[in-house]
Image (cartoon, rainbow, N blue to C red; front, side, top):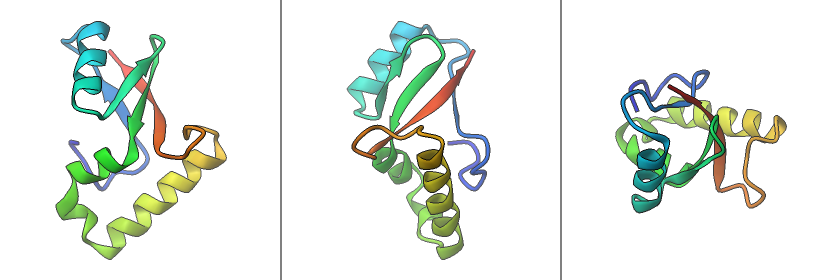
Length: 90
């Protein structure tokens, strides 16, 4: 997480790593998995835990909630609502 307060640009940067390596690392860390060549499913709880300090701020939490609701409206959440589909940048 480079910019935990930027809720408009959530993506997975895979420059310098192969898709296979990225998928393996995501699964090993229990943070998600790749879905095809252009997207990944990322665990929301794991993502939020990565920025625990920022997440303690009430303003940050409101931005997070708005981002999740936006993703829900776009149908970017998994069926159970625990993961978000993000674009992969190479």
